[in-house]
Amino acid sequence: MKSDQDYESEILELTYEIDKYKKALIDSGFDYYDFNLQTGQAEQSFIIGESLGLQPDEYDTMEKRSSYFHPDDLKRNLEEINRAANGEIDKFDVQSRLFRKDGTLLWLQHTGTISRHPVTGENHLVGILRDITTEKANVDYIKYLAEFDGLTGAYNSRGGLEQLERYVDEYKTVTIIYIDLDEFKWINDNYGHQTGDNVLKEFCKKMNTCMPKESFLVRLGGDEFLCVIPNQNTAEAKETVDQIMSAPVIYGNDPQNKLFFSYGIATFDREKHDNLDLFIRDADEEMYRFKKAKKYLK
Image (cartoon, rainbow, N blue to C red; front, side, top):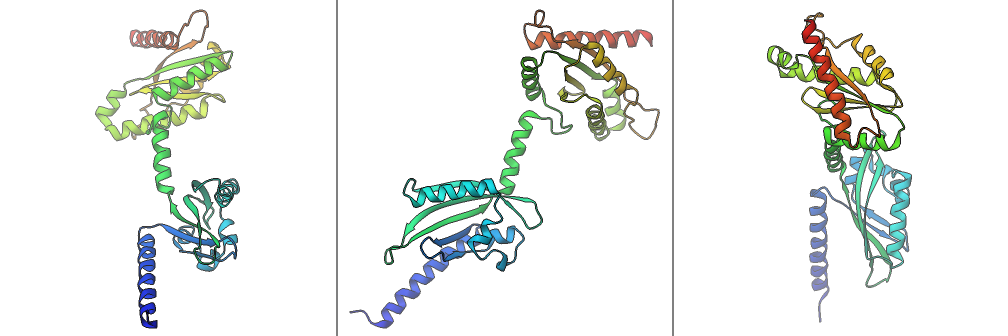
């Protein structure tokens, strides 16, 4: 028969094992919780509370913790918890938005399951919480780079052409302006690539202020761009170009260093343009005619 000392030793060993795993969880950045569904008692570490910028007394009840969830995501969490409690699922794994104390968003990975206490028979909701804000931002940025140019914020070629195809299907009239920046290589060679990058960014910023509503800009590559304008014909798009040229981007320290560009305009013709390549080619050819005429005038 075991003595009281034997039982005390076993309890100490079990307590040590539990504390060891709790510490490992906390040190790894994971937050754990244990919520008794019958009594309402809850135990939770404070990792997420710290990430939210809270004090312990602002995060010490389930009601307080729930108040920081985005309402839509709290509803989804509660639905998953109820499904687990009703035996419909063994565990759940959801991502949720929480509001930090300063109003900014935190993304949370919430994994949980129902555990039945072997002695009391009470059901406990136990789980792990993890701050995935940085991971979420990285994934979102990768998705962003799949469609957009990281330097200028314009669509990249892949994303822009997909959007152009949608516009051609959606709008009755779609006009494009094919743009090639003049002497951009000379700017890079004489002022450096950082100045060249700034010129591209400033040019796109200028374009975005002048383009009509629902228009978008595509960086086809290097110093070539495509401006896509719905609900405008060629003559109306020409007015947009004139507006852009009336206040050109200045580069370097000399106000005489003005950025100009060559351009060609084409309006989509369903009888003429069997595909987007033909549509863009028409605008490209117009741009080269414009460029050639400028050289001839010089």
